[in-house]
Length: 342
Image (cartoon, rainbow, N blue to C red; front, side, top):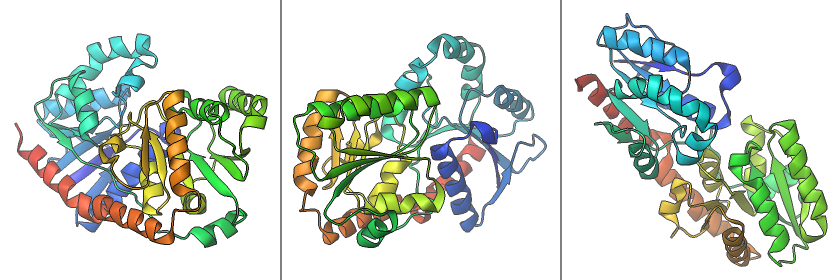
């Protein structure tokens, strides 16, 4: 069995999907599976794995695969989550009914990353075979709090809240700024570090918002985009990672923070709400009041009380549940089932 990955053009790929695709590719190769790039309807030994949606070349290739009875599976990667589907709905809805629905229906299986994504997907399309397959972290690191803070220049007596993501409306940084500014919390001795970039006009609006509320906010530091290995010291050295998002089918950055033992605040519009009992994971609604309340709770838990042992315990939980070495065999079995489904 070969697996052929069909991915968007490089210009359309963003951090999360790149991490997921490359992590899966490497994990499958370690399992002895040959992973090829690009489609080939003549390859009778391959399962084609489409990553993402809304690409006309996907539907054209899928039509040829169906003609030759070649199996394919699709990972929507959150592109049919309620928030994402509503975004530019005027454009997506007719395309979905005319083209995308047939592309999805013709697949042997749909691969989703969580039960939440499966539930949301069922509201859009009814498919006989939906496989829930979490993602792993391809280049994961472990806890290294003190060294990481030295590497990025954060003093030991300062608490750091990290926002590391694309700066996009969906990610909710504006809500986080409002929640921090209007929650009545004294942020003396705290810093908000923003790592990421986005559309210049939107980034400018965020900076204007932060400047207008500066007396009620911690110091805000705008780092810009930092990806690859260079991102890890920010995650390792932070006291709290925040992803105040409106919608995530998975949230790979959350997993990265957990791997290094950094506490996480995110929303119930991610699948991490299923693990809200985990010490160090704080779940809010994507609303300012809920974020304020959850921030206050998280601040009390971590301010001076989040120990090296706590970091190691959180990291061990992430490793136990989301290491690619444990997830990859599940993907292999899912591909094998896809080969057998008629």
